[in-house]
Amino acid sequence: MDLEEQILHYYLKVFSISLAIFLFVFSSYLFFILNKKIDIKNNFIEIEKGEKIESIYIKNFNNLNQIDLIIIKLYYKFNILFFNKFLHFGDFFINKDISSIDLYKIITKPSNLLNKITIVEGWSQNQLNNELSKHFKDFYPISYEDIIADTYFYKKYSEFDLFIENLKRTKIKYFEQFRNNQLNDEYAENEIITIGSLIEKEGIDVNDKRKISSVIFNRLNKNMRLQIDASVIYAITNGKYNLKRKLLLKDLKFDNPYNTYKYNGLPPYPISYVGKETLKIIYENYKTDFLFYFFDKSLNKHIFSKNYTDHKIKLNEYRNNQ
Image (cartoon, rainbow, N blue to C red; front, side, top):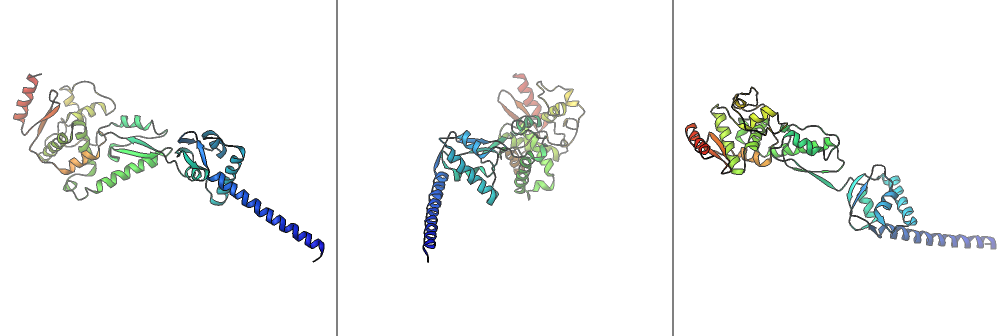
């Protein structure tokens, strides 16, 4: 080997060693930057649609220098190129002690924050619409028979249709436990929900709802009109506003299919949203001999009777004491 080849070989060896040292130092530095704990300003960060990675860091983290940002940006580009991992927009909960690598794992997945909507038993469609308007820009009314009143969680920025599908699945799954109940031989699911909506509007507590449920079934079995005030109120208002007055005798004669003083059987559809507890009460098929009841304001409870004579006596006593 001549001198020139020896020199070339020497420089190649030096270059290789230098390159190896540089790559080692650089990779170590990358590892350090990407794994070091970053100083987050707040546990909750918001990523806007189309926002750049450097903007997210500048907005949400302290003590970042330009080299840190360049390395983080390169790491982001690398993941897009080789793993097709993109940022998700939305709100995220971030632990205080977190590295850039762990942060990246979070913000390249859908928002890890859940929002909550509680649909209250006995709510009208208008009340639910008011609640939905706080959570969704685009939504549409939900029929009473389509869902069950309950508390539901969803990811912020979820599509309304996905939210509704979850509610409908919850209802289907809940009703599966009552699939073999004998009431299903006599009543369709929508009729059960309609009965539940009447109970939601009339009942005060669990025991009260049990008794009202028994009255409804007793009257249906005897082909008696249900004569439920809540259904008359719905007939007048269509569930769109509070009546804010007592029912009058002429109201009980109002010609509307929801007026259970005028028409036999159940109303055509539910008059409110129904909760799981009330549906469970219905399927218990609690038995009594009661056929009548009225609300005693002084006792804050319903008074039940087995026949019209007893009902009239109790009702007159109550009125005379007012």
